[in-house]
Amino acid sequence: MRGESNYGGEAVSQLEHALQAADLAEQSDSPPSLIVAALLHDIGHLLHDLPEDAPDAGTDDVHEVRAARWLETRFPSSVVAPVALHVAAKRCLVAIRPEYLSNLSPPSQLSLKLQGGEVSGAHVAIVGGGIVGLAHAWSAAERGHRVTLFERNQPATGASIRNFGMIWPVGQPQGERFETALLSRERWIQFATSSGLWLNECGSIHLAHRDDEWAVLEEFHECAKQNGITTELLMPDEVVRRTPAANRSQLRGGLFSPYELGVNPRAAIPTLTHWLVEQHAVTLRSPETVLSVERIPHPESRLTLRTNRNVELQCDRVVVCGGDDLRTLFPETFAAAPLRLCKLQMLKTVPQPKAWSIGTHLASGLTLRHYENFSACPSLPALKQRIAAETPELDRFGIHVMAAQNDAGEIVLGDSHEYDDAIAPFDQSSVDDLILRELRGVIELPDWTIAERWHGIYTKSTQGPVFEAEPLPGAYTVTATSGAGMTLAFGLAERAWMRWPQLT
Figure 1: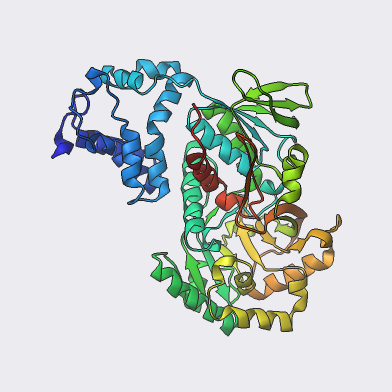
Figure 2: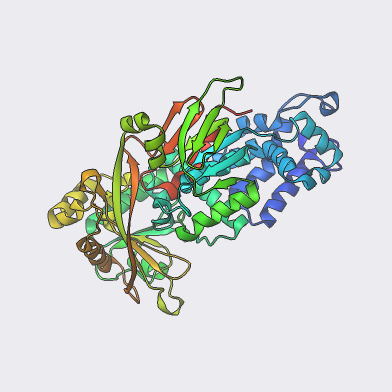
């Protein structure tokens, strides 16, 4: 067995090294995908016919590339990406932590030299400090690049902090978008484990209080099962055991999904920002507004970025992740983009008494008509027709109701959806009343006292889950995650950096 062969001059075999790495990952409470990645990170050494002393002869076996190519047809990207990046991670650690090099064994120092030595890193500028910008900053830093993050506000005040704090894979269509959401989920767990951020692996329940809602859930469950996605149909008594918040009156049942996570976005965004600065050497410039991005011909042909603080920065890549920044930096791209604005209204209760817990994220039957993942269910059109006939006011304001509990015990409630010309700067109390009316029909809370009300505005792409463009060579825009930024951003960033040309 090749796994019993010597591990590059070390006192262990290839198999022993793999098991040691997986054991360390497990001891660090890493997510399952990262434990598998640790186990398989050096499998590329077993996928070539080079002699064992190839490093001594000055030959790099590019094992991380061989491994990624072999794994990508067998494992999800949450396993493949760490394996593909582990050599770059070593080169980056040597660059930012001088003590790391002295702790490497002689064979590992030799391989480091063959792999290119410490990373000097391309310079990447990220414009926008919301969840999409932070996700791209993390992915860039992991690849050994020097990252400068620009945020016009201090702290970020946009849609990234004005949401439920739900990481919501169940809302994404099965296929690539669902897989992207799962990759994001794994990275949320990785970040929370490293930073100490509160994260609740709570799952979710879609509640059914009407027969047509139950029919859609049954159809979705069967479709999910055929695609290898875990969901569970719950009878009313099982729903009540999972969540004390379910309104028992006329409850038909529910659909449980195990994939959903909960974070407090008001804490998550500043914590992520601080963590990137402290752990990944990201340079934060905030508050600071980028005024222009240009590619000016000169010997290195780099991008030139200018800010309102009279700063001029030379970059190898710029990623614009805010809708307002896209509008000002690349107005022609913004004007031609398939974008629309969406306003939502939300509420939050006081902390619930006596450490009362909602159990899982909750969504009502109204939600079934909002998320694209349910569109293939044959019973959905009839459900939509019934809602439109019985409660047209809900369609008028795009109301579907959900509830999530944060680490303070507060229940975040919502929400509505108004688009483009219908958006007014003033919130309507009647919309809040409709949201609360519908919520009281499907959930029960010990204390409905409302502590806060707010609205958020986000950009929605009409042609997919996100809008991406390259207005200038090497300058990318990634925005308009359509209200799913918390769910998709980490995965979208990883896929983008794996797809874009490699920086050297």
